[in-house]
Image (cartoon, rainbow, N blue to C red; front, side, top):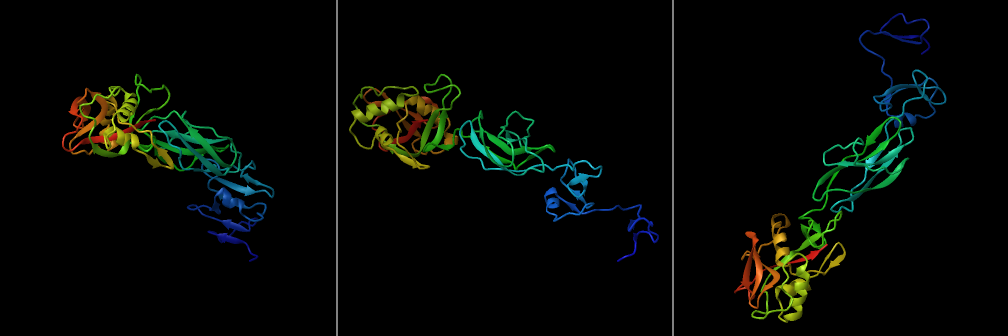
Length: 341
């Protein structure tokens, strides 16, 4: 076609090869992302496109024969970076590992990148809870700390260039807490200030075995030297004293001392029969730990009370100490092993 073309007019302007005339519609150039624009093979000078993700809300751009410019002749706006959020791993009571991958810089240098997290959805870099993990495109890893136990967190990777900050998809994770699977069993109690084993700024406590048994305490009418400790930290020594002083098989302390389990490729064999205080602390959290299904509702502690009795706890009243004959009656009493972490 050699003639002038008029759309909406039968008398196109003599200086125009194409004259579009309308009072109700506009001219719509090709619309594409910056990446799509950059895939145009050998663009001609004067080529016009609408870059849908350039700048803050899109930009009309023209190729000047060397580079893309805005309609004023200035440098074309860049787009936001493209970043993805990598899966969360190594979750603990107070931390986790994460990261991201910047797959496109948006046409401008990545000045900062990292991850940001919150206990509320859609965290942004306006928060203090974020990492800064280098610059440029590619993968990066991040270490998250100072988290609270048993808490749900929302996390996103971010990347920033001159256009602004973009975010990867949002992921969630829950830090370990009471009831979490950990260390071969279930987290049953976290040490508090004043507890033996408490260390400020660290998380330590007790793990209850997932398995439980019905046993007798053993060595009825025999006072076992040393098996009288009642506090937190006493259960391990009580168990040593019971196993060393009572040769009976199948007793509560021996079952716990012999217990071993492999979890996550790690063997856990440092279990003991809890002292009365340890047992009370664990039973107070029984609803989230699970188990404690003894039909007789009583569970042994390793705390001896004279030659004939030992302390136990009822699941329906864990705050109260009870003393029971070491024989455990006709059917035995519930037994649950614990270990410290």
